[in-house]
Image 1: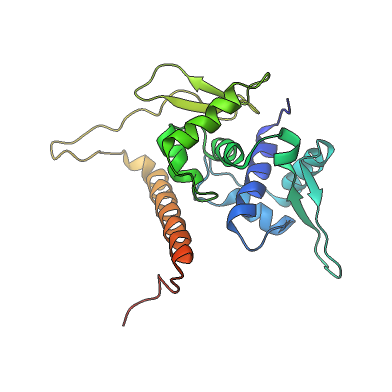
Image 2 (image 1 turned 135 degrees about the vertical axis):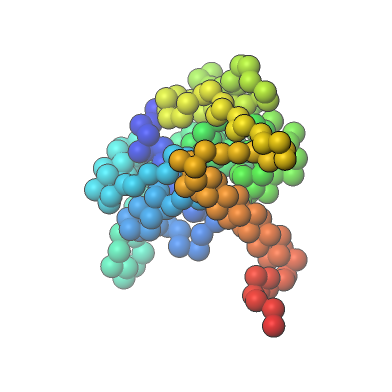
Length: 220
């Protein structure tokens, strides 16, 4: 099985994600660096420079997971991924695996919501089927995390990429609202921005399927 380091995981995950969500794919080094450092749909948030991303690209190329994608007359070198073919996964398995690389352990319900940014997943059963295939391989790429309040799953391409334990639940005030410490305000805002970005992408995809345009255009 292919084994990755944390920087390779982020770079490869972004390449696969942008292949499904961005018109700017294949990606330049600059665009890929920005994608690695974006605050939405990422955990943890990082601050890579281009040298670090380029080193990861060079390493991923030796594993055949990344290839040059230069077009005739282009002045900028671009890159594309070859993940589906190298890992021998189908499209559903690929987006589920990449979501685990980009955001860490999640439940099937979370994976369905978040991975649907990249590819429609009709039900949790579809997600569970993809997870089961990834776990049933001779060298599993996903593991089920025992214990916890809900069944969660983690990737195994880089087992130490994210902590497997669940984040501590926030205390609840007398009004029933969760209270988060002031020191975590930036983390809370990043999570809110992430959820809004996910919902916006889902709405835009559904609008495109229905032929609706300018859905977010301000109304007079």
